[in-house]
Amino acid sequence: MPSLGWIALGLLAALGGAGVTVFGKLGLEGVNPTLATALRAVIMALVMLGVALGTGQLGPLLFGKAHLTGRAWLFITLAGLSGATSWLAYFAALRVGPTAGVAALDRLSLAFIFLFSALALREPHGWRGWLGAVVLLAGVYLMAADR
Image (cartoon, rainbow, N blue to C red; front, top):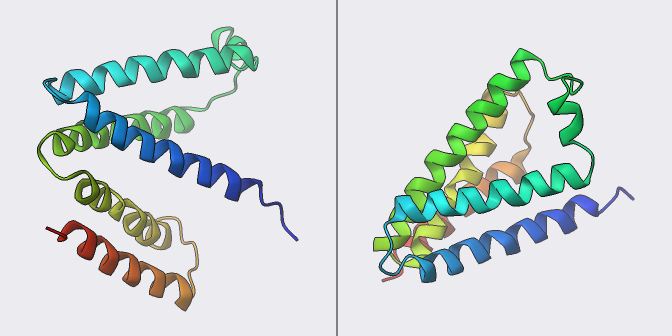
């Protein structure tokens, strides 16, 4: 049986994502969403730097021994820009929209990832995966339209 570690980590990520949404919505009261996103990013950066330092990953980067290629830097940078764009839009939507609806629309990223992984990464998907994507789209619609 394959390791279930990725499932536990995935569930932890989902729980953390739920915390971001609920705590973010509560924290946005009277706060500009761009400022809130910037503060969140600084806090995240400090935590991640602490983790990287604590696990010994920061030293090799600082001393040029991390072996990051130009391609790796490019895609890490694009991922960072994508994340920043996503969170700016997410917090702006949370400020004015219903929490569950905004979160449901945000989960459309799963459908986009599924499609992009098939098209750009050439990852094969079976009928169950495609059916899951259709059910996901239906669920997002139902949750976002629940008003």
